[in-house]
Amino acid sequence: MTKEILLLSGPNLDQLGSRSPEIYGTSTLFEHVERFTHAAEELGYSVRHLQSNFEGDLIEAVHAARGHSVAIVVNAGALTHSSWALADALAMFEGAKIEVHLSNPAAREPFRHVSTLAGVVNGSIAGFGALSYSLALDAVEGLLTTP
Image 1 (tube, one colour):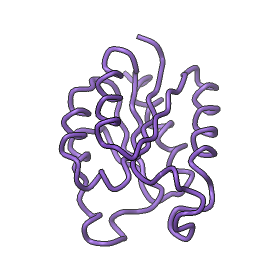
Image 2 (cartoon, rainbow, N blue to C red; image 1 turned 180 degrees about the vertical axis):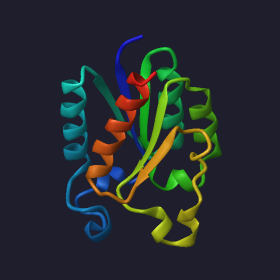
Image 3 (cartoon, rainbow, N blue to C red; image 1 turned 90 degrees about the horizontal axis):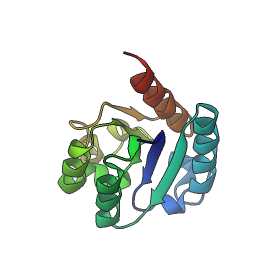
Image 4 (cartoon, helix red, strand yellow; image 1 turned 135 degrees about the vertical axis):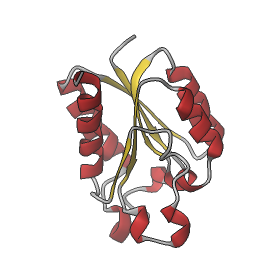
């Protein structure tokens, strides 16, 4: 198994930087991925990133990560609150799994308070803006290196 981290970005995250900057900040998805990748490489990991506005693409990426990637960091966007299929796919992945959000879903609209992914990931990091991705990488590193 390689030391690859699969970084998944769900629907509408390709619009970061211009979409609701008061909630999500002004960094683009490319900038978040670039920072995450650089920091991961410094720790000896490679990163494969996929952004899709289609649930099935994300599920297929999780399936392909089985036996290949050591961790998945997923910002599923609104699918966090509705995709039992993505949760089922993540449940089959045996590596580290971190759910990440730029905003704090618990402080937003009531439908965002429920995560279908929470029960199948090691943990969730939310509400720290761009720092959320750095914290997710710290969590992956801790999970993979702590006995």
